Image (cartoon, rainbow, N blue to C red; front, top):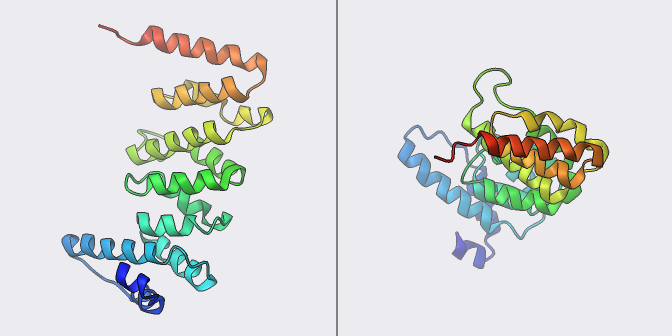
Length: 198
């Protein structure tokens, strides 16, 4: 793929990525995903509408890091749903986080929604949902929120997941109105007191 990119044989890469795939064997699928990742990365520098549409189409089926990274380089808000969804995937999370950081305040609303919507909404939350919410909250600590937005996150200070709880308190201390910050401090102290240090 690097050789094709070096030769600027982008049409060959595009044709490959457009080819239909129906691979049942998991081992073959891993190999195919590796090639798709490499091909998508090779197209990263091309900011053409046809490339964008192709990458969006690929993201519909698999949130591969090469595809997510290449999509993120476009810097378009249309990719937000895929970037946020990719936060749940260990392999794709770093490139999705980088793209969301680059989008900055444009990503704020999508991150707020991601942070506050566990999956499933009732019952035991899945590990992938926890990863997505933790990552979204961490990004919100970096992007920042307006004080009037804080009430959307307030309930997360009572979350069952300690990392989500701590991140929510951190956001409160940085962004909430002064009257709200005391509640965050009290919540952090109660969490500390509840930790078994033995």
